[in-house]
Image (tube, rainbow, N blue to C red; front, top):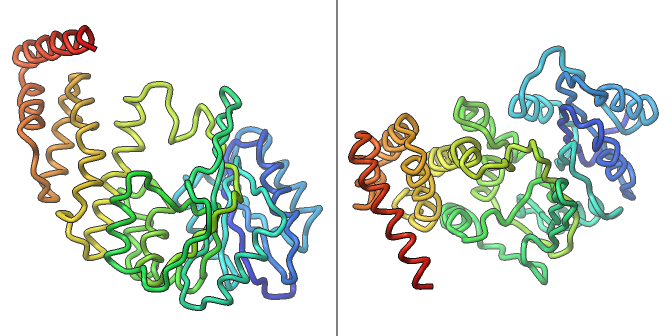
Length: 340
């Protein structure tokens, strides 16, 4: 690859032999009047993923740069190590089990970024495919037309973005964004991207870019996000998701907001939408350790608890008090069901 590409597409993959081929085909089908590169970070898969990636790299040496990790790095380090290698003026990414839908995604998004030099990111609409039952949800952004406001960025925009009921409205795999701006955001505070509390790689990039410049939101569906049974965002039991990925994203978001200079008191809708679920589930499962962690984290960020949340916390500390309150709660729940 002797030319400098216009776009670098990041693909991280691990144990995705059934899906990585379709993902790569959707990237290779792009029709552009410029060069682009596909960077693949193969994270020591134990299935046939590495073999498939090697075949694609050998067959497409003008497009693919393959990075075969010598040891498993995990999602976060694999992603940002790959981003460090990007040569393109712009960045895009695609999960190893997702795929793009249109042949002109890159062309159209690059045109928009070139036309609007103040725009930090152009994103599209997306679909969600549930692998377990083969159901397809469309128009996940809920947009019927393109949206762009050149003045909508900075702290107020980030605050509104987090407080939206249908957050997130941006999925990075539908997007194209500026490489130099992204690397500048990362270098400004590396711990927010690779720190121990980071579980979601696209969240700090999205918020960091929205601080620097406005987004251009396309209404067209450009990508299919595949939900697998073993995905970090999908668990058989709701509790496992709440205690695992969802709670860690919640804490990561509070840390990001705080570091971006956003008062957590202005994130009332976001906190109210998420925090009660964690406390309630810790109470219902009698998980004293998790409850104590929640309360410690919340106090650390200066977030006040409601009277109901305080009662649940106190009850979790004493098994007899918890048993009595739990029984009363179940009685009231049955009463509510009978009156409906």
